[in-house]
Length: 426
Image 1 (cartoon, rainbow, N blue to C red):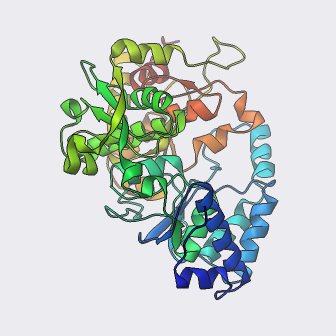
Image 2 (image 1 turned 90 degrees about the horizontal axis):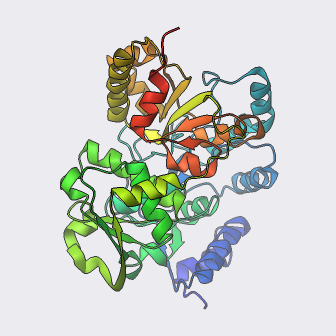
Image 3 (image 1 turned 30 degrees about the vertical axis):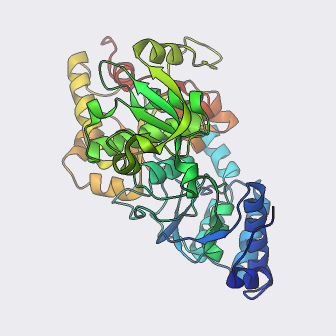
């Protein structure tokens, strides 16, 4: 299939904006034609979002490409946010791990300078939850995006009603540079129809990360329409519902490849279209307590010592919201009081966007959380874990994304509370 370009688009492809931008355009055209796109459409969101935030020493081709773009003046047509930084000196690490981090991410400072030249929003715009108010990159309903980061894309599509395909790293930057993206998949009306109906029949609100995992593994890259969640979440996208859907969506996107879901009576397109958004012949998947237990019990544990005592706990993948930080503070205080302990018994790190942490630190909750021994950080837990030194550690988490991509072991939020707070006094 050959894409039909407008005269302006064809001119860019022919070199009207220089050889480098022509190569960028050619790459996007080839990308679109691979997926059957017949045309390119304008990127209409105010900002972009990049997935590559980490200065791995081995990514030489990326840094060379960035230099080529910068030298040619082919910078982003939009300002952009980017995924979290990989390192923070406040996160527990032994001397060997610290040295390894410095070697592994040896290009971090120079790469961040490249990002500044290319158009990053600010030195605080490093987070996977770019759409939060404290970060300021929240697209409007119907906006066409050029984003990567699976959890951000699925949130933008589903909760905000924007339109974006699951782009890979670099391709999202290319779309922001030229200002167009190929029109296929989740950008189209047909591609946004649900091909699965998920019937949630649980007696209480399911764990977001567990429900998302079950759905993601069942539907893979398809679009699910979920019935029954509005019984627990209500019909308004308030802070609580959005935080739940953030974690739910991240699990669907990482345990499967979901880029869009619809929640009956709650998410924008489901409220507007109702069940007419379900495609003919859609398959059905019923979820009850037994099904969730089956899914959880089949998660592999790849620790060398199955019964090892955890050395670290990560909460916040994707990054926590301000309200989640406050809620977790109260829950940990209450759990410690019940256990008779003063501080968490496992080193615990809560991760959130720099802007969220800044606002949290202005509240009464920040010193209270610190008193429990919990550390707050802006890093990406996945980047912390994805190396030989930390991959061998017994780490626990309530993130199904972190469980999927690393050796971290999954527990529900209630189970995590027990693990990090309850131990007999010595």
